[in-house]
Amino acid sequence: MTSAPLIELRNISKRFGGVRALDDVSLSLDGARIHCLAGENGSGKSTLIKVVSGVYQPDEGEIFIDGQKVDRLDPVTSIAHGVQVIYQDFSLFPTLSVVENLTLNTFLREGKTRIDWTRARKMAREVLARLDVSLDLDATVETLPAAGRQIVAIARAMLADARLIIMDEPTTTLTGREVERLFRIVRDLQADGIATLFVSHKMREMLEISERLTVFRNGKKVTEGPISEFDERAITRAMTGRDLHQGRFVAPNLAGRKPRLELRNVSVGDKARDINLTLMPGEIVGLSGLIGAGRKAIAQAIFGLRQDMSGEMLVDGVPVTPKSVPEAIAAGLAYVPEDRLSEGLFLTRSIRDNAIVSSMERFAPHLWLDAEKAGAETRKMFAEMAISAPGIDVPVGTLSGGNAQRVMIGRWLMTQARVLILNGPTVGVDVGSKEQIHGIIQELTRKSDLAVLMISDDLPELAANCNRVLCITEGRIMGELSGETLTEEALDSALSREIEGETA
Image 1: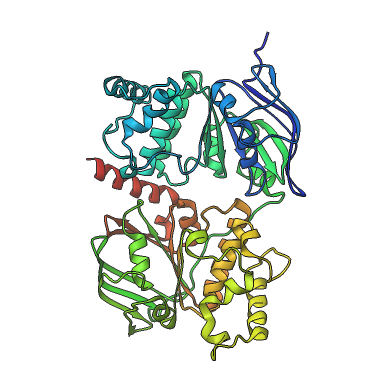
Image 2 (image 1 turned 60 degrees about the vertical axis):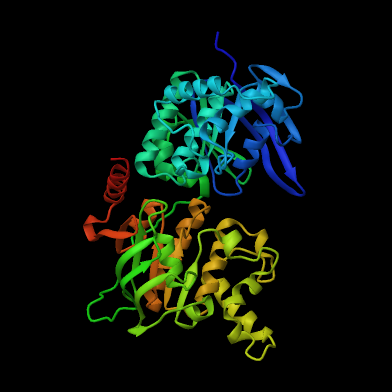
């Protein structure tokens, strides 16, 4: 006799207004199985997580746990049945220590008013030993790298007697070596009888770690089966409803061209030292490195967001030292930040307002907005960037991640920039939109002689879209990959050497 699934959802639907976030979805999560849930942004993955964890109540359908129907699943009941969710931000207390983050919930559940530190440290050491990892128990969580914070979150879930751990995009900020360690931990959890639901859009990782795959599209479950029945193409087709065909970027012949951007012996505070970089028109140069390696500081200094830069910077052979964003724009520079929601977009304003805000001297030279000109140029950008929306008056906050990012990139192209700096150009963007954004960037670079500097933690993104990648370690350029040497494997190897250097 086979045992009942750990959690079973039958014909679950969930509406928000007139939108069906989940539409008649059924899903079984079996004990000690590694199950992957895939789908583009807006496909229903996050809603399903919140139904399983009791945050959302379904409008229709039934939920069973260990074969028993649960009439109302709330967060307390979900946790009591062993469901733990690790979100992308890990939901930890950043200013508390590792041992406090690991054990505080345990003492609270037991009704304790004081922490038994001897017991707490023993619990922390034992759970980390089960994961075969070592962490400084007294270190504050905010000082840990992303991989360390993730381990704390997993260990905390284990101390809560987790039977199912749901991981939402768990490898977003991890290097290849860190991903390997995470997968080893997940397999160890499985050996201990703990199931994992991976929510991801990275197809190679799905194929490597999961035993069973479920794909959502537009709130519906479109396919499900053993991972052996899928390859990357099949997963992509299920997620998007079409085949994707992204070619690798090939820069034009650069012989005889003059540099568009030059950095000569540039240092940025204590973040970057002796940076020498040449960026030619028509090429896309990537910056690879660990988080904190200095890539963001270099980009911000180029764009006038930092005032601690020394050395020399030239644009088209002319020395420039932008001390502000307007000065950087006037020099032909543009910068798309990684966090478009908090650093770039005005979510309640329209696409048009967001598009023209960095070019107001062109559209309102005498303080009066030329609405006709602003609308015409925004519509042109709207078409070039293939933005999917009813029109340019739609609030940006209503757009998908991919469309919002296109507005952000389009805004800076409307400044007639000659150098475009992209920091995490497709962070939070689903696979279909990612391919389209890559294609747009490549085409604009080729046809307009734009020079692009791309910062990314996504190694396939760098390998597919750059003709050169500079490897940054502790604020220094330590190597360059190009041509046949520019592969995902070579980039991953470079990052792994950096990690080994840090831990040596």
